Image (cartoon, rainbow, N blue to C red; front, side, top):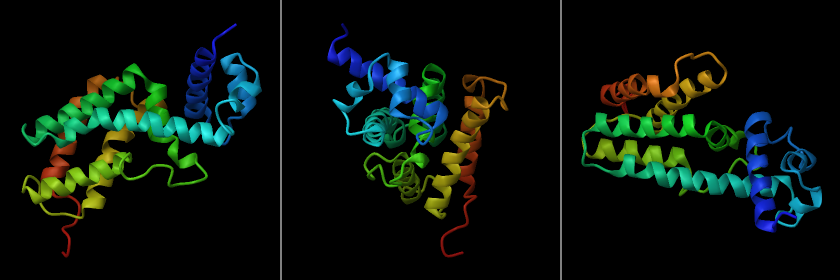
Amino acid sequence: MARPAVKKGRMEAAAIELFATQGLARTTVRDIAAAAGVGEGALYRHWAGKNEMASTLFRREVHAFVEALRPFLEDAGPPLARRVDAAVRFIYDFYEAQPTRLAFILFTQHGFPDQHVLDDALDPFTMLLAFCQREMRNGTIPPADAEVLASLVMGSVLQPLIMHRYGRVARPPAAIAADVAAGITALLLGGTAREVGA
């Protein structure tokens, strides 16, 4: 008989896989239990239900991802292009090693009934926004609407991964990381987002 910790781990892995591939709304407790090879009651011994399980796992996974990404964005030592390249390569390597986990982290949040499932300390967009604001203050990038710029950068990172996931980008992420990073660096240095007050 599987130990409780082993069962819990199997349920977590099954839930992340299902939430990432078929979405929160279309995943049931029965689906998770069947995929994990446990009874439905096992899930309720750890979580009140599917939504609590999803939000708990989501916060945990995003926290680990953000903490791993943070040094790339907060280290002001290397030139901007090198920092952007390192951050993009980290994200793309993470995707190639754990595509389902990254899909769960980056693409699942829109399915939660409570759209504010993350606080600012865990939110990747908030961290990226702070990065853009800090680089503007330091004079590394030109003044711009920081929220728009952060949105453009996030889209530039994620859209190639989404297109790869759906088979629309054939080259593997590792092969396009340098091109994506160069494009993001050009975007940041070019001040493409309209200057504040312009």
